[in-house]
Amino acid sequence: MKETNATSQDAPKRTARVRNRRGEGGRLREDIVDAAAALLDETGDERAITLRSVARKVGIAAPSIYPHFPDQPAIMLAVVRREFAALEAHLRAAVQEAGEDPRDRLYALSRAYLGYAQDHPGRYRTMFGGLWMPTLGDSSLTEEELTTLGATAMQVLADALADCVAAGQSSVADPQLDAVTLWVCLHGLAHQYSVTRIFPWPGEPVADAIITRVAKLNAGPTAAG
Image (cartoon, rainbow, N blue to C red; front, side, top):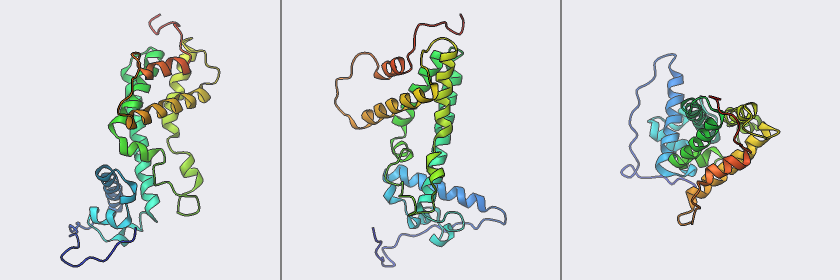
């Protein structure tokens, strides 16, 4: 949307930002990412994140962004990368807290994933496409940058499923493939939880049913056994 010129009375005041000392340019880059993430939380709309809006939030002139980010999609990519890192840390913490039993760890990880989606709906939607992802060639982003997003978080899920197989608690034949299948199911459930207001969900938690069936869990030996 084209921005109109405002009068001096209507124009939002930009808080003067203290200039970084030599060697502190990285701090400004983080401030830009922080501002974009804050705008996303406030508006829930990636379209509200423009170079001008981010610059106003930080308290700088828009051209000051260019040494750090060539365009708006590059800023969004930095936001999304940081969120995937936060998701990965969240999942690893859930696995660690679940104890030694692989099956318990897989359940805890999957529930933590759904909890993250419910607690951060705007950021979660943006992480998995949202409205920000541009057509390749229309921005500075590369195919590799987009296709590798979330790869390490997905590996946490694949490793947890492989541990269940190794413990004799799962009969899946391809943990990598079935981890993607499990993620697709959890992602779909997260979406339905976010958009469905009235639905007669069954008594058994749907998430547990998905995990048990897709991961082909059985009553195999526990870690203690």
